[in-house]
Image (cartoon, rainbow, N blue to C red; front, side):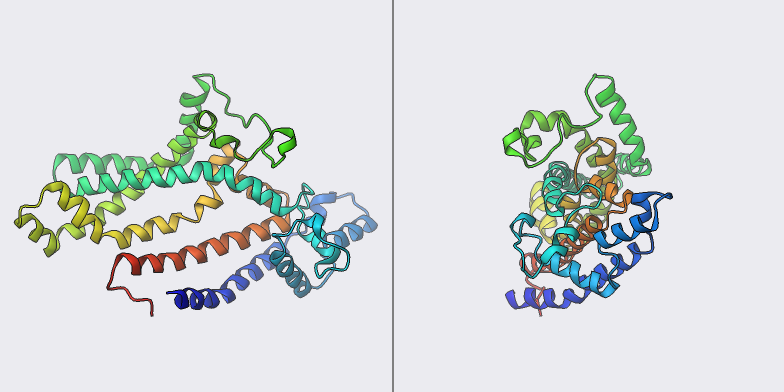
Length: 342
């Protein structure tokens, strides 16, 4: 299995590098210098800022510099010494053009807020939708099945923006809660008493994260329930289910032992598709609820044409998706002996 993981990782390195290359090339269609300085900037100002941003160098050099800096992103910029391989360019390339902050610190401060929303959403939506899918498939064609599927179709037919607006009004505005943002700027500054783990406090999580999580769960339930129901219906028609029923196995045992166990591969596929979003966050929810997570940070960087932030986030997202694909294949082999990593 270790050899398989190493082999798949090596195979995906060209994919990783190609995605970064395409994103960097696409970003440079726009001119961030003009966006920073405005229309009335003089030639000297434009040239000076272009040099500071590193855009005066050929594209292949910018690409190589970014890859080098990406390998050194784990090391704080302040610890880089004069004459090291990274040099002054690392100080410029790894800092946000818009905020002047190290990109590694921006990522470190944005991941926990996103995880406070996405982890409960993933767990709750998976558990609820799997259970509802089992019940619906086991009672296929009956009134409870039709009712659950009707609710699921209604839920997935309504835009997430409608849920956000209704949630903000009935869940925050009417009760008088604050929905415009956080009580302070979330940064890793222990001396000021601030921490990115502020919202992991149960009371703070209920006040600031529970409503966005509920909206995300409601939105995802419709799609997930219909998917899991289709999987369970297919499993319920197989011979081993009829054999278990003929042997007198209880309904609960048939549903949660036999059927659920043999449906794990599509369930794993569905969950692993959503796994990278634990880190990347939910863009709409973070923007509308003022949550300083990865999605909101990325949108702000795109609006500001902040290339270092966009490129680093793209590299992180790509690595997460590649890792989730490899982990999916490994889990296939663990839950199903018929699958071989060859």
